[in-house]
Amino acid sequence: MENKKQRAALYIRVSTAAQNLDGQETELRQYAEHRGWTVSKIYRDVISGAAKSRPALDELMIDAHKRKIDVVIVFRFDRFARSVTHLLDALETFRALGIEFVSISESVDTTTAMGKLVFTILAGVAELERSLIRERVVMGIQNARRKGRRLGRPPIKKLSCSELDQVRTDRKNGNLSLRTLAKKYGTSVWAMHQAISGAGHR
Image 1 (spheres, rainbow, N blue to C red):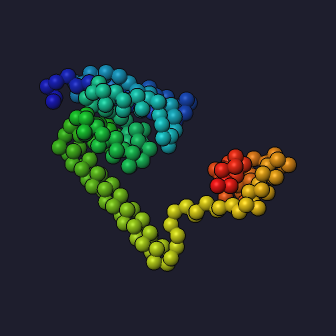
Image 2: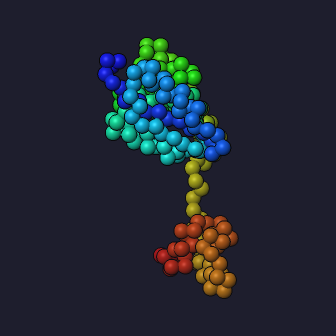
Image 3: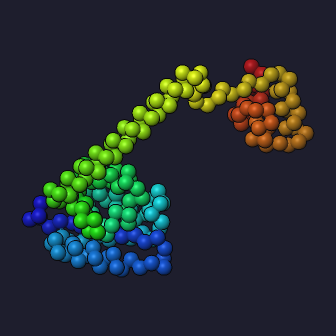
């Protein structure tokens, strides 16, 4: 693919407006130029790395699915992904779409054999972690069942006729909210709605 003019997407991020995006952009532009790639678009986010949704990154992923780019270049992993799991999910998406990924600080480049190996190792570690979590969840459920514990949400309390009448009285006299009534009688907001509307007398 090196003989083809690659369309490179540069993703840069800082946490606050007080920080400067220019340093990352210069580094990424120089890297793309050195590789002979064309910078098709620069995606800039000024937002915390912990944010689940980032406008520029979301736009990059949309463009990736539209096959508008061939390679994504970032300055460092933590500039791009909020966690290892997030990073691997993105890399798996890129791989499925035939898009390469480069992080220049960590020297990870999936256009090379070594870069592909690093990605494979990371993916293997992440899958192992997911498997261990699944095993712990299954073991926890089995252990709870052996001890006779009820799993899931508790059943909704069914109100008696006298309680239904009292609910309507409380609602009329005190103008209490459905949430307040539900808490008072130990049931759900939907049960309160049914009681007031008359459905609870069925």
